[in-house]
Image (cartoon, rainbow, N blue to C red):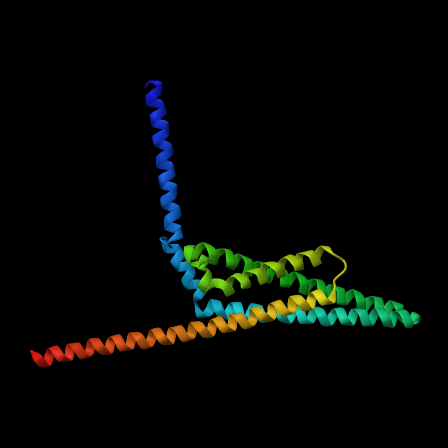
Length: 217
């Protein structure tokens, strides 16, 4: 094999690899893989939505508990400042509060990490459908809320100063997410009802046509 034939062979191989890669990308982009459709069905299923709502409620509850514990910690610190005799008791209370706050914080990070993983699966499974800006505007903001909340939570994990106003901001973010999920569930139920009505209408028309055929023949 001379140099020209070798170069031609290499070029052909590169073109074949490039074409194969483009076909794979195109198939993924158009939701051509079966597992993409399976993932979409799982994510859009009633049970997965119920799990998501439960986790959002749990996350909001943990954040409320953390805000309340933070207030108790401030109150305990103030009381220990004015009552020097019971310093040991207040220190013990403060340590317990900090422990519960840390547990709550880690639990919240785990839940948010789950939502980020779910978002990545959704992007992969949806293909080009996820990038439909007109239909998915709210989902983009939803993704922004999840990622921002996780970043802030991770920042709080490393930082000793935990500003209460920032926690309230995160709380409002997560409350919005809860409302958004409830709204999307209501929309999906409404869409299912519309589809069910359309199927019934279709079946009714088919039955009428068959009855007409039987009467005519």
